[in-house]
Length: 316
Image (cartoon, rainbow, N blue to C red; front, side, top):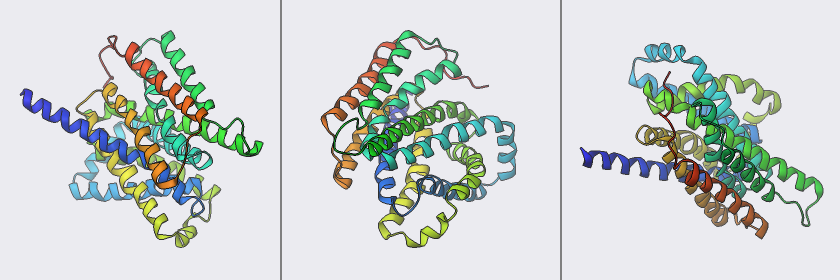
């Protein structure tokens, strides 16, 4: 029994490592698609593709009507997970990275565990301690340090990058909400089913918005280069699809704290990819900002999660 448990735990850790590696490629893919697609289309078109692919996989597995009926009973949960989680996460991150840098997107992802702890105050009825408030403010200070407050760039460019970093932080908030909120759904659905039924309301809600703000997005697909098609396919299959399936699979074995702690790997992978593929560099102030965000996150897990956290996520 212990050997089986250790094997499952090792598999969960490997799945978390791979998921973080796949997530880290988002910034590079977004930057490669710049100029080919608008930021909204970059965020939403891959999601639509994986949603339709998920429908096909569910049809192959059978009992589609029964699954839709079961999902309808939890429609509020899937709507919140899709709109407040995935839509906010992907639009915020994609818009933010397109205005800022892929490196900043990777580093600011360290805010996700902090936001996750604060969301637990609402979802789990945990206390809002002074430590959690202090850590949140410290993490947000790191967001502003990562923004170009001085230098040779124009004021408009600096403001644009600051807005991008704030959008990335908003995307991190949506991602944290989805990660915590979807845990309860694992009691009733598989990872693929959770993805599809949370992506479905996101697709329905966002489709009119996309065509209002970027009405020619489909015609732009014909002008994409081979590299840009590869980036789009990466976002659809690996970022929206496999990475989330791996994460939810691991979440069924480990608790949210361990899964959140694994997100420390994402900025390491993300900065390495941005450095090697895009040639991005960090200035000293940005190193300081990233260090502040990392210290804030480590403080949370060292001094907060070392204390008893209650009975875990509610399942009803």
